[in-house]
Length: 426
Image (cartoon, rainbow, N blue to C red; front, top):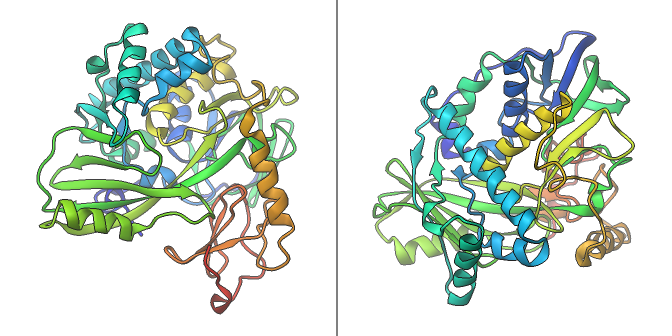
């Protein structure tokens, strides 16, 4: 279903690739991270080109709740405990710089940008909130001055994308050193940035082991009482709220893609209890890549591919982190130092208590004797009755009932679409 952003904006269109091309820097993926990378590269005078398999902003970017904030749940207390003060301070600085960059760009783009207070709440633990406030004070940023904002992401990106060198309906099918093969020709580039939400190249980086995907639902409510500010529950599975015009966006009720979790009905039930006069204006869903340690992977794709870079694992904070990623990757491909490179390095240690979970999940699904298989790595797909899709519980690829590819890391449709009558609940 279309999001509120998709029904209240129009995006520019771009032609497909015509034959072989050569460029200095190739960006793969037309979501917000890829578009921002291309914008900053072009601003720096680099020769660059962006390839998008379908149309720009058709994936997670078009279905976000569009909060711009450095307050990512209760992240700073955890970072101080697990990574230390230096890492926590860098994470805060990188995201505050991203917020500042949005604020600057929004001065020249009509995108409904507005400052909003942001609140993390808890229904069970006052202590957790007090610990987070203490962590922010230790980092020199009182909780009340983080200065978040919200905007209309597609209005913003529509204006940003218009002058950029973009080719749509051009799917990258394979990569080799400084060369991308697509369905319409090849592109030779000195550097390549993979901004495809989930990295699709399995031979390097082990992303299939250190990433998983989560799906969450959103209702746009009309007639709800007006609220001021953005709200998010600190607990896993809680709800988030933010206003947009005369609408209230209610999000949450999600979980790991391909696994049993909530539904729009849970959001509807919450809305009926707390906003009985409200009517549903639209509903949509988003998908997020999550890393094992909670920090994004931004930088060289792997130690063995110096020509290849990526940005992924933004969790539920992809808007702000995409800006931080774009600035960092622009520095990387142009050979400039960046103070946050080590913090977000995709090559940081894989030794993490949760590392075994993705491997065990993949093994279990490979041993499943029946059901359609994901073309990414052969995992057994699970039927999602809420959205009438086939979802991969290993890495989050999703397919329509007719076999069309909806979400990566798979890069091709199902060769033999399963019959609807064979659908089984997740």
